[in-house]
Image (cartoon, rainbow, N blue to C red; front, top):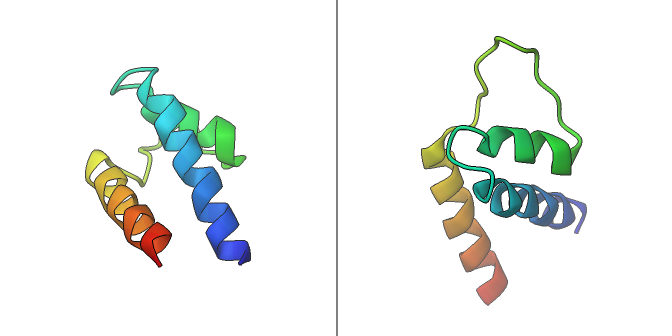
Length: 63
């Protein structure tokens, strides 16, 4: 239950950040999930990870 809430919050961050543009999407994730990263360090999540999360979210909502 807690994990599902966290994933939904993470997904909201990704969805909102998509409006910021492809270069700034990670900033939206950081803001909306409360995660942080050091300036200059590459963000772990990539565009392909977004697609995996979308697929995971779709499958989990069907259950």
